[in-house]
Amino acid sequence: MDTKEQPQRILVVDDDEDIQLVTGMVLRKLGSQLGPIVPERAFSASEAIIRLTPHPPHIDLVLLDIVMETQDAGYLVIEHIDSLPEKHRPKVIIRSGQAELRVEPLPSLPNFVIGLHSKTDLDAGELGQLVLKALEAPQSS
Image (cartoon, rainbow, N blue to C red):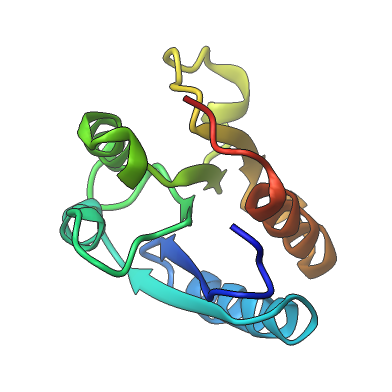
């Protein structure tokens, strides 16, 4: 999909309102440079799963926190995405504020998960670059 032709739909899944607001600002700025970006918000795994249930419009990218209403809520979202038909699977960037995710072994992650990053280690420019690379990358099968 050419990012200049159709809007890119990005679902931000995070229970932290401040993270949601800052991410929204980054996405709007990126959209002014790249072309239309439609940010959507979910504050829990259950809300994200509802938004990811296949129906138009399709979600292109998910920015996903892991620890929300439970310690593994984000992994439930990943499991749900993995159960979707391939054409409905968005790419996923995991962003976590939990230090233990950087030291404990992660479960095997599907190919559509294209990165794991600390929310606190990413500045706005780095987040924008990650999103840009993710949107331009081919979909893994």
